[in-house]
Structure formats: C-alpha cells, structure tokens
Length: 73
Image (tube, rainbow, N blue to C red; front, side, top):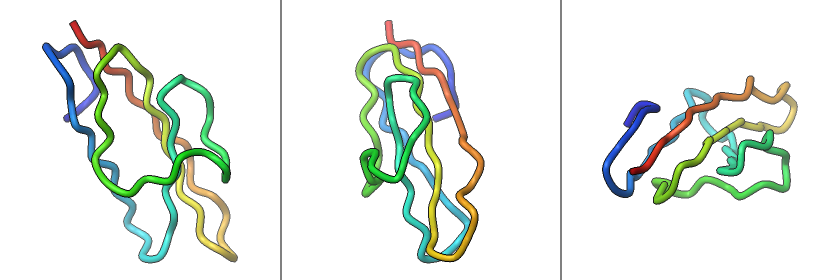
C-alpha cells in the first residue's frame, strides 16, 4: 500500500526495475546502507514507521532512496 494512515499491520512490497539489484531497507527513518536489512519479501509494518529503501547492483551507482511513512492506529 501507499504511505498513509491505516488500521492494523500493513504488508509493504518493494520493487526494483533493475534485474539483479539488491534492495535494502530500514523502518526507523535512517537511510539504508549496504549493511541494512535485505528485502526478501513484503515488510510487515505493525507500528508507525518510516520505511526507506535503496537498491544496489555491482558496477552501478546506488539508486535514490525512496521513503514512505505509515501511521498505524
């Protein structure tokens, strides 16, 4: 789902258009690094969080950071 306010846990899917890229993310509002959690499937957001994601691929410049805030009531 898009960023926004929700009742209950949301399972957020992250996608990258570049085949073979590794997506890493954080849920505490910090910028993702190459040592952040690797995305392997939907991220369960069960409390108010800022999800940030970035993609890496060897030989390529890292992607821009994408961010979305989820308010869970």
